[in-house]
Length: 370
Image (cartoon, rainbow, N blue to C red; front, side):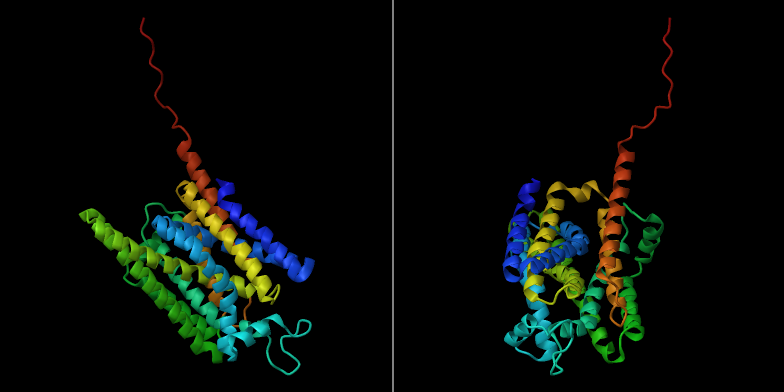
């Protein structure tokens, strides 16, 4: 099963590395491999969350996410999205933006000899808006999970009090809004403050809209199922699946922001970024997602979902912190996510071992008579 799930990703990796070698020699091949590893390490928590949502989708919408979704992830977020930022911020047409990306200034310069900014500089300048949008979307996802009452808790000493606080209506919006205002007021530059607030507000609105619509159609689906209406069930399932698909795509985009921006610390070449982050990294993240669903890993390791959401909360906080001059290395971001996931897996194993241990027998053996 492992080979069947990861086989396509392995083939795509080999082909991508071959293309990178033909494109730029051994240096391009090494950069492509590094970016692929970077994307997988940064997005493992993304795969866990994707798996929790994918389990709720019909087989049809699962296939849509794993086919059309991968095209959006590879070409949309890892190639078109950075170019689109340059189109908007620099007022260039698509051809000019792509030419700018393929022809950086000499050396490590941030500007060309004529004083015009490089592709990497333009994309980096847009980081405050990107970080605010992605940070608030992920913050809402984290807060809505951690403020909900659950039968199973991981960090019980913290999660149970938070769940009690979550009984207050709209408390997640209040907490997220306060975080956005504080980040814009004390961390963002004066000339970025309004754009940070707007981008963060859009992240909150999109999360509430997509998550709310998905929940509404899921409720309709269960109601139709209880009523035994087959035609209504099929229609409701389609709408619910569609909005879950949109939810997953926005979620994937939010996770991709730090990887795309971080890639420019390694290379500004959009072809290498698309090969490494997109084809290699995104394909393996999809394969990990499928593996988690097919193996029922989330049911076996019950704290894994909790660990992934705490990693999401950490990433959201990091994104908001970096709307100003503070820079947190992508390696730190990846290690924090891996630490939460690893701790959750170990806690799940300990829990499973305790449940499997036979209870000690306290009653003594009966004494034979006669």
